[in-house]
Amino acid sequence: MFVRTAALAVLLVAPGYAQAPARTAPQTAAETLPDGRALIDKHVKAIGGRTALLGHKSLQVKGTLSIPASGITGPIEIFAAANPNRVIVKTLVPGIGEIMEGFDGSHAWMMSPMTGPMLKVNKELTQAKLDADFYSELRDSKTYPTVKTVEKTTFDGRPCYKVQLQRVDGIEDFDFYDAATGLRAGSINTRESPMGTMTVTTVSGGYKKFGDMLVPTSQSQKIMQIEQTITVTSVEFDKVDPAVFAPPDAIKALIK
Image 1 (cartoon, rainbow, N blue to C red):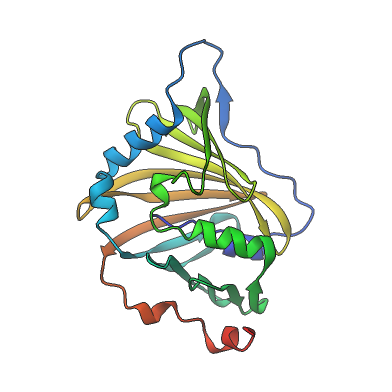
Image 2: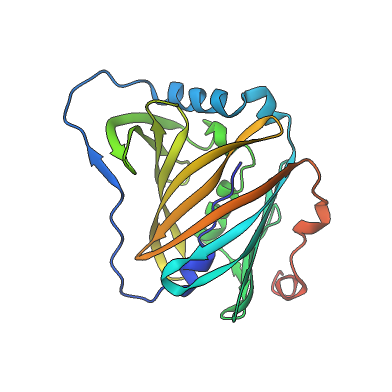
């Protein structure tokens, strides 16, 4: 349910950077690996359970986004909802202005002072639709028909199980589940962007209870050689006004 956002870092990186290496180190000791679906189910149970998860229809997240290498820190606000799946991310960057990224159930878009309004089409639109799944914690088989635990490894300094997830759009994602707690420690995802195909490594931590759900309050993302961190200060469920997902007028003008 925590929405990933790489929009700001994508807009700020320069072409030509090498991909940042994932923070993983394989372990050589042989052991029987747990089933991938069982690891997902354990995570869902740890954050509150399937019933509690499905009981929510929307959420609002407030926090701070920072990019230390650029000296950038600003507020971030994330709204998400189900039936249909929708999401909007708003970030206010000092000296630049507001950057927004959204999916309204049909159209995906991005807008910033640097690029102006942009619609996502083709692969980017398909990916935005799948990534907007409000119940993505479940890793539903309709989106991920193939799930497999590939190894036990060290991810961000923690023993974790690495789970390969093949999506219906052909993209391969990887989740990392903490071997001790069962909680998702992070992920490695490949996505299309205005700058081409990019690999995003996300490290999640600081799980805290909001209502009946555990939510990570820290997410560090690496895109190319840029690292950004989202620090969550509040999470509210089921209070989002549907009107918040309406695209800005400049985006509406692009929709035919």
